[in-house]
Image 1: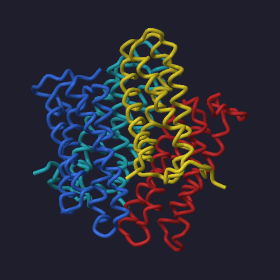
Image 2: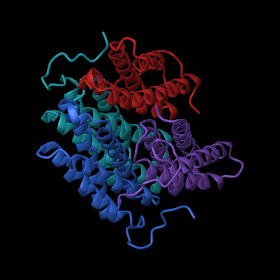
Image 3: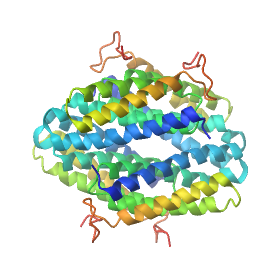
Image 4: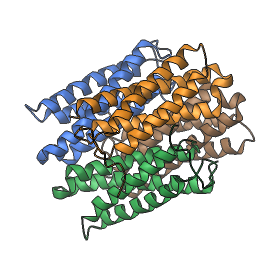
Length: 125
Length: 125
Length: 125
Length: 125
């Protein structure tokens, strides 16, 4: 079983993937600025990197570090893109979940698979 | 937003994907009969069709019926494969989740996207 | 290694996934009727079921039948949705690839994993 | 349409995903040291990050840089893991494809979405 931080982040990544998938449909129904290509691209990218992050963490992958770091960055960019729709409850919920996932990913990106913090070997020497 | 039955089944599908991904790692660590190709193939297939089922339901896909039906079948086959490991808690938990997902999928496989039961249009005329 | 029919269909499924992913971006750039929710939903569903179909065939999955059948149906529906954009080269290319993939999937949906045609066991008894 | 470097790397990523998926089945059939958890984990991680990389490049994603960089690292680690099986043709073919994919990913990881080389904005400021 993955350790607790990995498990919790995998759960966050799944929630983030889910809300991004739902947000894509929501934006298509809204139309207008909601279907601007760069916004929709971020929602798609975020859903996919969250999916990969989730499964890597569930299998306690030894090489998760660069992927969780990339996931944190894309979640943050996606949150900022959602922020632009002031007063839109779906976009607000999506931004909030993206930020929770980004925070969780940033934390585990520093961890070794065993879960201890410390200098992670996240590049090929 | 997807209707409640779709949402609940998507959640079940994500849980089933998660436990299958974890079970693959568990089986690799156990070795022996746990890594028999047909068992491992079912765990992989189950994880993947659950992933696709989950995202299709989250976007209230009008063409979910054959996919949710296929997911129900594969989940049931995966559960039976896990059943063979009597007394193994991980395999028992995996089989139980697979059966919950199969039951949920079987139910929504009969539904139109709007969620009403009735003759679903699940093949191309 | 998967048999030739499985391998060829997996290649078709990857090509179909690719053109659907590209078509989603193309449609977002075009806007208007190209981003109609039902059309975009089909492109997304088609990309995802093709991805799952491709990997199941690459691992010569014994339980591919219902999934390849579902893939054939969704590819055909996606092709019809693309057909409506008369004179649009990207949509024409996407429809053509979807039909090639549907034909390939329909053929292997009748096959046992070993590749022989015959009554496939594609439902759980 | 994605530029040529993106398109070529997406094709490489799909080929790498395919051979990793096939290699997982091959290793399960071989058993013994082929199913060592860390080796199998790398093959799974490599298949998944290649899948995500492929679709991000096909949609000319503006935030591909960290993901393509991560993909390059994981492909290289997977190649090294395959190298250990001297005289094994499937593992050799897998290692070769992983290295082609790693090289392609490393190149595009330096590019902006438009394709120009230069300081890529691959982290959130």
